[in-house]
Image (cartoon, rainbow, N blue to C red; front, side, top):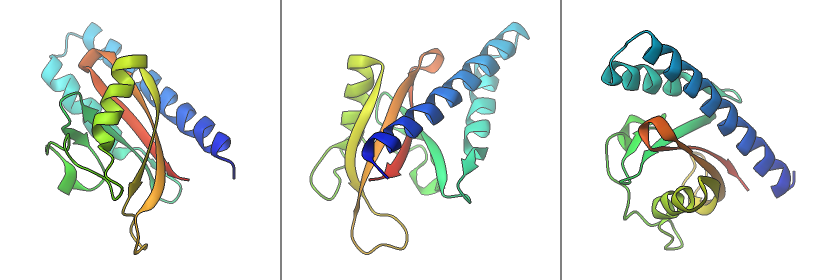
Length: 142
């Protein structure tokens, strides 16, 4: 499949997720639920979102480089700002720069995927979730 197809799907999945989160956030704010409880509920909802036989997922990145959600708990609550991929790219810095500059966009990098010996080329679409100033992202192998 073409890179253009992957980009379209990535953007659609993230846009749909952001729309769902914004609706949930708005409904919980109207119900006078505290920001702390809303943040926990949204995080739990994101962690449940899986597709493609469980291999597809979204991640949440704080603007300080801390991964908030990822299906592997190893990544949670750790700062990855200075992490470099197999080719020396600061992928999380690039994600944050992309969101800061444009509010959304694509980032290319290399990542170790289960079942592969070598890092694989990946592309992520990231978009700002304004209520909590977070990047919501989704990836695909190129």
